[in-house]
Length: 90
Image (tube, rainbow, N blue to C red; front, side, top):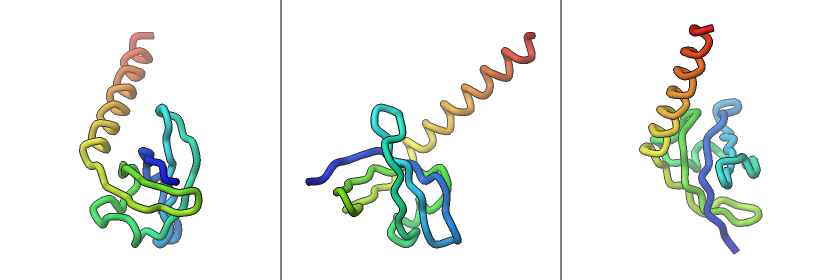
């Protein structure tokens, strides 16, 4: 049986292994490693967001989602900006 998750490329180890964090309800559910070469070329960088179809022991399909990555980066930047403003007000 397969399931679909949002996954973020956390890091690339030794230029060959990608560490993906699988999310469920905006929380990390598990970590999976795959060869970098198995990911879509456009998404072979830290912070890339994918839609993954997985089974218990393998990744069936990885679809790179650049729009979701951009939205995630914008949300993180907004949070950082809010925190910076609060600190400068104190």
